[in-house]
Image (cartoon, rainbow, N blue to C red; front, side, top):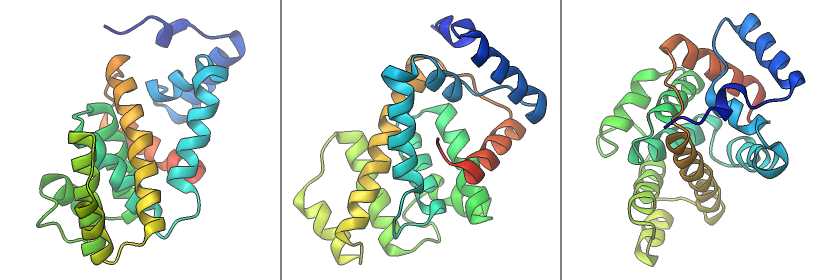
Length: 193
């Protein structure tokens, strides 16, 4: 059940901001944005900082790779809103929607590097099972993934396992493909702050 707070639980200044966003983008404000503006002192500011660092901070993983990780974790969690948002963002970042779709369809046959494939498999196992093993980590290292890349991928996984659960708990509305694409452009230009 969707709580009313996502529709009207905001201060006047935030309502004006949402109106301006809608006016200029010609798209509805996504529920993910609405959630971070509700109680920013409790959740929003911290979530934005953590997610921005995981998705846009320094990393050997490209922005496109991390957006693909977010889409993959979201697919494992069956979170429709986040699948749509991060599939669009990864596709735009790679400039290759087919690559992203192929990974989400079958990671084992997708045209991606072995290290990324091994990382996605590990993130899928962690998301599904809540645990990974030493063997999982050795597989990543033997595929050429560095310890820092593992840490970076785990940060993406943590951010989106949290976001997926919130999106489902708050019943985030699915957007049109055009709205997901507009959101993707915003995320690629400005990040998660």
